[in-house]
Image (cartoon, rainbow, N blue to C red; front, side):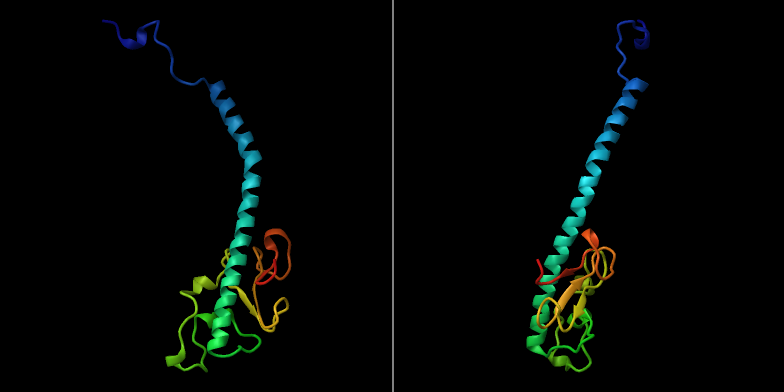
Length: 147
């Protein structure tokens, strides 16, 4: 009995180097065409999440105001989680589950702006991907109440 690898009728089952190079080039071209579109969608989805979170925090802020008072100008958004010194302990409960609920999709704390520039009483603001005032695209500011 002859060994299998010596049979002349045995077909090779491996790719040639040319076939591998062609496949790698095709995958590279597809990745170059598709990746920028996907990355743009990720930025848009983060903005949509930030907008929804700002609206949710605005609702919680309205509940805080109804229960206690309108905070002074310069108050932090953390007022929704950390008990202010001038509120009695028996009348206090957090308005969000944790501090992470006060962060935008880029990991920055939302800002509380009193009085509001877009809304009458207050604004909940995310400064976008760059964390700076102003900007365009993914770095654009997001304010509750602004579409």
